[in-house]
Length: 142
Image (cartoon, rainbow, N blue to C red; front, side, top):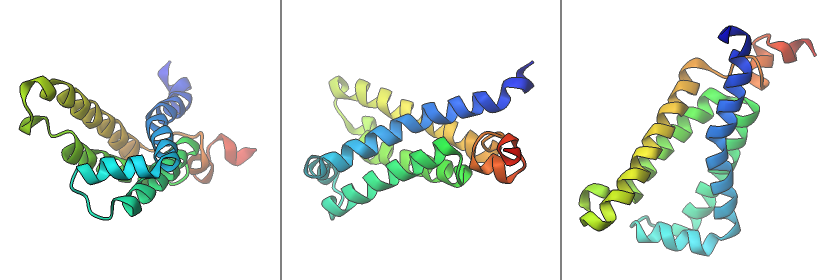
């Protein structure tokens, strides 16, 4: 039974995973100075340039994931980015207990999202999307 809905489920999963990145990227690009301030607080140099680069990356890679264009590469890059950002900006292990709980939840949420992204990288998009079209999915016949 699940075989008949495999590709639609993969599409919905990609959309749900990408939503976090598309919205975050657009938000960062809409407030470069605020984003740069937050990035600088994590000890990252060239915070304004990094803010623009990260905003563009999240937006473009998130949209690539949604439409299934080079989705495996986009998912792999987003997974690596998410894990790195989690270590840099949610270091629950070095915080007082009153701050550690929320940061640990955010860290674990990001690790879980990275796991979902790694599944997309490993298994692909299904037949719905540009990658599916090239592989002979239903869009190839359209």
